[in-house]
Amino acid sequence: MNPFVIYYTKTGNTKKIAEAIAKPLDTKAHNVKGVKEVPKGAFLVVGSGVYGGKAGNGIIKFLEDIPEVESGKAAVFETSGDGRKMVAGEQMKWILKKKGYIVRDSFVCPGTMFKIIRRGYPKPEHLEQAMKFAEGLKK
Image (cartoon, rainbow, N blue to C red; front, top):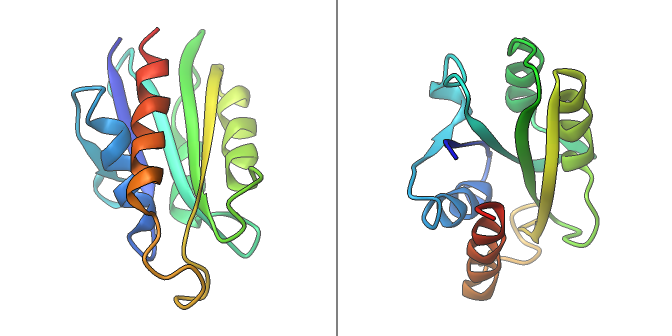
């Protein structure tokens, strides 16, 4: 497994979850703003916050621009003010599937909404859940 964790965030919440996911995968989390391409043969772990009911434009543009692959593997995660249902993740899954990736799993975590609702999220228990999610990806 060659994990490559990439994320888009406006508030920093998704970065915290990305870093928690990267740790058990023994890799680094990369902000999409600094990434030019996907390493060959990488297992993509892609995340975003939810903005206006969809994934961040930066991650969507990145995914739309990556080349198609044959049977690539991926997983998605999101932070969301709702924190219960996958919204941005579904959008990212759809693009990844279109590019030839098999999306193995997904993870959603509550996040801050409008900078005042759920202030202080993600909490330590959410970071632990993110690390357990990553452990499951190694199987």
